[in-house]
Length: 320
Image (cartoon, rainbow, N blue to C red; front, side, top):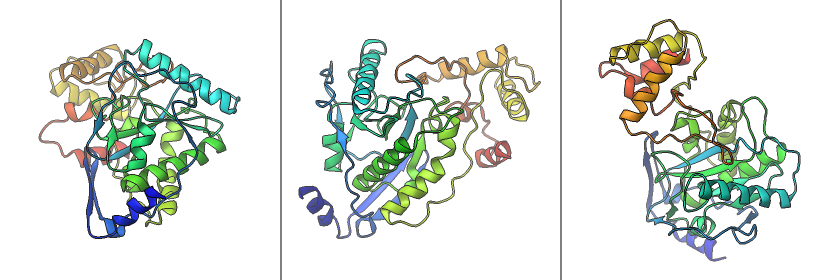
């Protein structure tokens, strides 16, 4: 196989590095992950994708992160057929092109509740097989040049994924990681980058398990323990973490109460911070514009933390 020969030829001292917003990983090619078999991936022609409305940009570098999403809609359906997976892929593309105004599907790959994997943005499968370049998508606001994204069909805020979806997700992520030499700790959720519920609390909480399972397929040691991330706060939330956010907002000049209640004034302040700093409002939901206005997450917290505050210590306190 040509792809196997390409990977075998790497065994000789080249260095694979990943540098990005959430950390750095470097491995020598001699220690790189073994080849993982490509799972069945249905390309854009298989599900009758529309042609893109613009040029697909292929960047001359590998992605740093593999990012897990959920589609929100059409919800947690029980139609697990391949035909349904193809329909869902077409629906996602229509929404992204006709409503969002993107040139094509935003994510590189889509995973159905029946465990069927489809190519999302055109050329994503071709470029992944090459293992050296990256198709620029539109699924992680302000970070698309470093991220390759997988939309998982369904809503996973309170419900778990199907066994078939989980199995195909593990295989797809392991294949992507193998092709690009990505270490399992660089498997992230959308909310690690943007202020969004995505990929849902249940699926997000299973990411450590995903990293472990992928690591086993790669033949690597157990992934490093993640440092605490920034918590996701939403309008209506209450408690000490909201109070901390309000204290930081007040220090930034916003007239918000410090009462631990994420009310309208706190929401308005968070929106103002995001707008002033040009953050892309990346409301996840591949087939519906979910309203996540005013969510305070990974991209907003650093903007309200003062220069005299240790972010790691604050994250640890907020996680406690």
